[in-house]
Amino acid sequence: MRLSPHNSISVFCELQTFATAFKQLGIAAKAKQFIRQFLFADMLNIYLILVALSMAIGTTVTSITTPEKEESLLECAKYVGSYCGNEVLDTLSNKKSNVSTDCCYKIIQTGYSCHTRLTLFVLQNDSEFKHANVTNVLEKNDRIFYMCDKATEPESEMYLSKCVVKIGTECGEEVFDNLKHNKNNVTDCCCGRLVETGLPCHINMAKALIRTPEMRNVDAIEFLNKGKKLFDECLEDQE
Image (cartoon, rainbow, N blue to C red; front, side, top):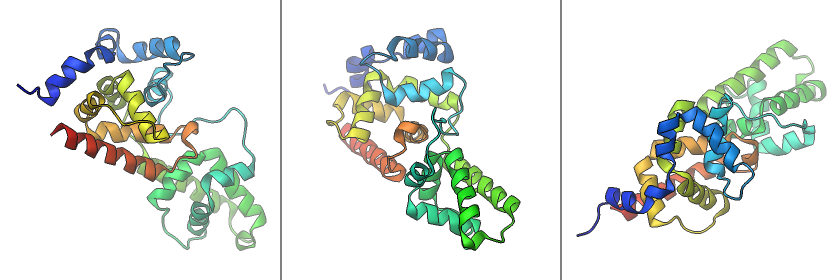
């Protein structure tokens, strides 16, 4: 008799998950313990840790972590890119009504500090804004970031914590390595767990990761599309 996908997952993946411990000790408390145990170990699982970390220390996932050292304007410009930088300028000058979703991801990845400092630089050096009302432009600057934040934010920390439990440590690492580093194919076992976790969880964990400094140079839309493609492939294999 052929095992169903659900039974196969139970047989082969039970020992890979820390879901039971999470349920026994509580999500936030276990997240802190989990981070302390593995933060400096080779088993560090970025796919899960970055999400768990935001829950454990009370940091929201709706804004990118501030780097310890303030980047130069050149570095800020590199993060946002010329295409999205021009979209922001066109929106600030009322040539466009909104920034595209693709560029919203890039703006959030760039971070509020860089976003605002670039706007201030433009105000001081671009002749197009020579007679602009500085207060109005800065209000638009904030509105752009706020709207992009809302357009690209993942679900709540509580929702993400349940997703973390579902995917498990080893499978989370396999998925992340496949999407970020193109490492190996995801095993049948982890494909089954990914399908069991569900597409909404998978995509929302990816959205949370996109907002971290480590992912600044990653094309957010491409990363999300790769995630959807991987899920579809795993779903097809399980049928």
